[in-house]
Image (cartoon, rainbow, N blue to C red; front, side):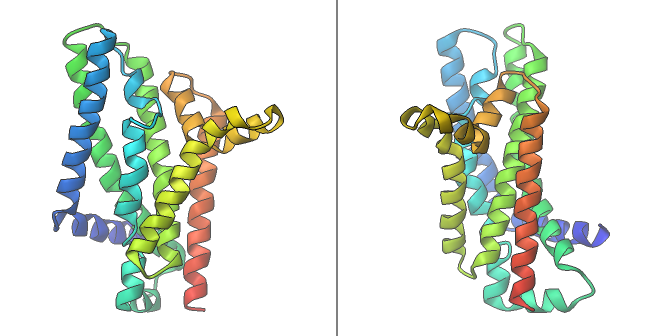
Length: 239
């Protein structure tokens, strides 16, 4: 685990050594804040529901775009530069490499999300805020971000082109996000299947303040599955 943490620290430092982290975090905070407070003043209620609830114009939709952009370089860049071969010859396993890179990207994403705690703190000063749904909502958003980050890492192991990795990651993340809405155009018999495989459906449950083990299990399964495939993909490249 120490080797994975060392890789994670290196990745996280590389983000903050360039303008990437600052641009991503500031843009996320500004746009997410504008989205939330514009709806808050319209509703007139001290409520964070609209911040967590998935929709085409929500902070979670921003993560569908931002996370593939953050993760696209993790393995693809090292493959293109040839440093991945050097990394895999060190006394470190493919699992440790993938886990370290995943944790590095996740650290940046979590940092941006946790900074938005300023929003409920501000809202609590102007109205009575129920912190129970807020805590549940943040737990759901962090699980959601963790799943998208794992998918982004997987896409980065498939190609040595960062742009291709971004397109693959965004397409897959967006498909899982919006597939929930296809149930309204599909036979009712397959609606439960579309619901379950949709990331937005499980996020919406948690946004309502409902903690269901099925939602947590879904996200954890998605994370473990995507990281497992990432390890297998990396292993095939230097087999």
